[in-house]
Amino acid sequence: MDTTCIYNARIINEGRSSNGWALIEGDTIAATGYGAGLAPLPAGGRVIDAGGRWLMPGVIDDHVHFREPGLTHKADIASESRAAVAGGVTTFMDMPNTVPQTTSVNLLEWKLQRAASTSVANYSFFPGVTGDNAGEICKADPRRVPGVKVFLGSSTGGMLVDRLEALERIFGQTDLPVVVHAEKEEIIRRQAAHYMALYGDDPDVSLHPLVRSAEACYASSAEAVGMASRLGARLHILHLSTARELSLLDGRLPAAERRITAEACVHYLWFSDEDYALMGSRIKCNPSIKAASDRDALRQAVGSGLIDVVATDHAPHLLSEKGGGCFRAASGLPVVQHSLTVMLELASRGFFPPERVVEVMAHRPADLFGIDRRGYVRPGYFADLVLVDPAAAWTVTAGNVLYKCGWSPFEGVRFGHKVWKTFVNGRLVYDDGLIDDSVKGMEVAYVR
Image 1 (cartoon, rainbow, N blue to C red):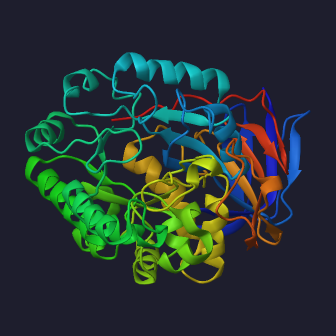
Image 2: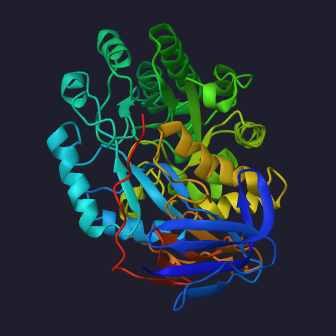
């Protein structure tokens, strides 16, 4: 059995930051300890001196679009999982708006088999509910899916569900978490018609947050919260982008007791509408990036614990597809390689501590979805670990981006933290710029 000891590390885990070590045996964390000592190591085991670098559980990203099948000219499971592990992401949950859409058990199984042969990270897939397939999706094994995805607002893929009777059937029929893209379609259409009448068929992208407005987000999220509360559903609102939506969350409840939870994404914590002037359609996404006051409120909510999860909504497009304004430019950003780095940069600027970053990017996703033995640095858990150098400044360039689409909205940004090594199930898959493609991730299991 392969054995590795990581010592002289700063372990950030479960609200604590202390010097210590971790012993990996096979795919599992065998033991951990605190202090300057070295764990007992069998003959022939590997020893890694972390040199004071930070050791954390690998990031669990509950919201990615890896574009396979059908959209592989811009991304695929192999390429984006490589980018993920380079950013310290060891587990991802992929969304169903591919071609064809993942709206049946058979299509879900195809994705699982594809990931088993190509993904260097651990993987899981959301089936999508269209309003007509709730009975089919309920056949999915609850130990193999994180939840079901519902689009309450139209986005890439055309999976909008806006009929009340269909939504009530979905919310009332499943015990799985219902994860939602919440934007009110009729408000978006009204705003789109208004701005097209003023500025033509494709208004400037700076108007995108007025078309896909804060009003549209709040109205849809409020309806989802009301329905989930009435029907007793387990609701997870994806990519909150407004300050007002935070009022729908109950921060008085302990995290473990919440039936309604929410996710923020790193780009809503980093960018604001002030950045459209420089970034243009590169930061066009759905929901839209909104005012600095919204960004600042979301940062505060992450720090206070009101926001449960921080993820990416990683949604790559070719730059040629990003041309145009509000309506012609494709919506979505490639983010997964840089999400942990962005969050640690925000931590270094004092918005929240590094321990909170680990909470929202590893611990809470694991707990919220019931992931089996991942998300913590604990004996008996899978050895999904990341070592971060907190003193290695670097700049994002097109040359060090690993996304298949070939660009990043963070190009030119200089960060003060860098992922050094990433372990997936005890195997060193990313080592200071090198990726071991022979490593393959595991299908995530859920305990419910």
